[in-house]
Length: 451
Image (cartoon, rainbow, N blue to C red; front, side):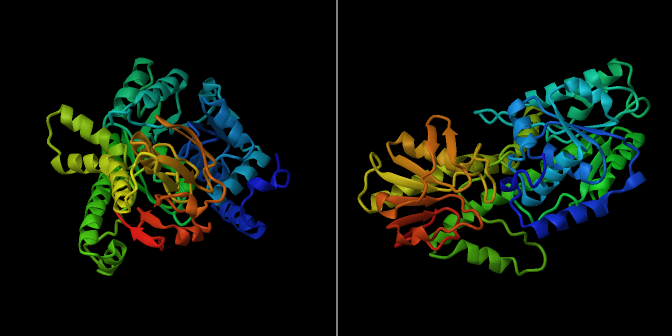
């Protein structure tokens, strides 16, 4: 396909597209990497941008995924991507540097293999590592001597050794001698154009020093700095520590938002004022909840293993309980706002504004808004939603909902703001009788409530 053949998918001005391609060309290292081809196993929000960065650096990439639907969305450039990555995708498809396939046997064609599959939790918030275990087993099956294998999926400490190193050794492929194995967690921020994976340092832990050197050669073309730690286990733990840190602080921010409301103060104003301190404070803002596939998920891969080992983690464990409870707290506050006007929950009409899990993305899976919707529908509230990036949402326990095209404020007893996307007009909120702003950042309606 060509960029000109499908202009709707190229959502940035031509001049910007030219700048992106020029920047990518500047990164092409020529002989900097000894790897002739890289296979990416899993083309989700981590694997696809990683593959695009590698091909932009001049490396042929084999993109592998078990989902034919996902492969089709990539092939026609409709996959959810940042604007700069969409430019790279169209260029990659045009140039032929990105090949797409569901045939996992093609792993054997590559000199380097990067595993980037999801590691979710189940409905009881227990880690569900089946996808990463299956991917590792597939890679082991098709691995050959001389390859470099890098696991990037966030997972239990020890997974690289138990799911790659040992099974490979059983096949006669010894890490550091016959094959090279490392863990390098992803640091991609979906939906945020201001944060580039090229500029973000990458943590890397090899099973041996030789493994670390080989993995660094794979990553060097796409990042400005690789920070090498002592082992794969240290790299695995680093990723879990990063996201547990964020979860704890976001839970704390939500708690302080309630304290600010008690005093009649604006929590955003307080956080921004505290942020003027040049040391010792890192700004975290409250919201409707924490969605996506990292912060509300990754800490459980740390806490579950420590709990089994009898290692106490009271602060992080309590924080994750508060993270899980946040959507129900927001829903409860919505019911309070309705009750203040004498509106009963059963039959009340609420417009949820923003179904995506964060601003600037189309993904609504595990979003706070979907959980809030479940809570409200469960007590008889009639819920519609408006999200300019999420046309339909199939919510577990509720069913399929379709975004309203143009909200009519008079139709609803309450507008509950969960996510607002940049570049869209939310002026209709000013005409709403009551607005519960769980983002703490919109001007609200005739009466504005916070959580």
